[in-house]
Length: 602
Image (tube, rainbow, N blue to C red; front, side, top):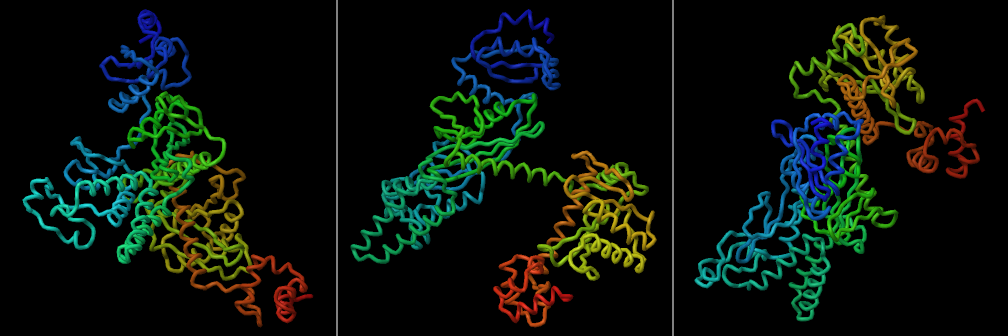
């Protein structure tokens, strides 16, 4: 539809609030939107020059428009969300969340059972949830079972069947997990009291249950029924333990929904914290794909509506980082500046930031499980990007590791055909270098690695990555030249922070595109050498393989060395101390030994 064609129908568009639907020539629903004034909102698509390519593309595809007038902005908001969820138009925000969430159901029957389900059936049963975690649901069921005796059988406990004596109590009754309603040993009124306690647990409101159990414990104790009193005490303990596991912010906060958002390119990430009685009861983070470069306010408003509907939230206050249009009646939108609500928002922001970083980490290329063709495609791309003579089917990467400036070690990982070859990994205890010298350490381990491969007539890699930049690359090249291997393989340095790649002798680095398959593979190799090196270093420390330099001083034992390190934090600082400083800490005799060791010329 062109601007000229639209001008012929613009006067027919109502001025009232409502929703508008854009259709393609083939009748496909392209976009659903809401508006305070339909005419003004729809006209903006055809009379403006849009910077967004996607918006221009949408306008080009519009063939005809339909409207629905509603009574208020709130009705427009709710109808828009309903239609987007139902039809998922290609130009609307796409929320990527296809999970089926678990519920706890209180079955619509005599003496209702409570159990876990993913299927919601409209049979009059009450569904509590949904919950984002199966583990969380199972934990709740365990708390309920250990505190409130409910039946787990699927018998038809109608009054007639109970009166006829059709059933007998089972093992659950004898274990104290059920009060035997099947034999008429428990009234329906008493059973309903247990169900009300279940609902309180699920809503995070444990105070009434704890108070009830404390009263019962007191009554049993007064009546000399000490076994029953002890049973109540244990139940109170279990409930308090469960309560302590939850993140309690402040019970005065009450019931609120907390949302935070991070946008990155065409995607946004929204975290939802469900807070019940000041306790964080559940959390969920979703990814949304923006189709028309929507602002954060619009994306967040859509996500709030979706998540509140998905999790059946009826709380009267939502906490958000920015002002949003949320016209649902009786719901307060709060942008906190401080206090407990601000702390909740900050916690939500931590969750959404972690979720985003975790997604990025997972997107870093993992070639395991891919076809040979897919693996080769990435390797050919890496060969082209680095202008390698040979296809890098064999890649090795080196990294140094030390602990608080002491105990240097190095690691080498090997990737073959783009996949980690863990049997070929090697770690090195640095032997010839005194103190901490990353360049000298790199020179040593590179020499040891490739002199060994040459001696054993093993194949050399096509690409060697030195993690650490120009200085360590230069040190590695000294060993490569000493072994007369220049030209036998390509050696590059990888700067730690900027992910710049250096070639020997080049003044300038190269930077591969952030999302290129080549850089993703290089990151994967680098992250693996970090993991392998740090794990090796940690294992050595935990086994006590490293001896503190202080313990090498004759007359200085482990206790004295530990005492000094606790006070001064490192051997480097201890070397700078005067003899008088040492006397104050370990006495004259030991101070003299330590000082003379580090200052032999004096």
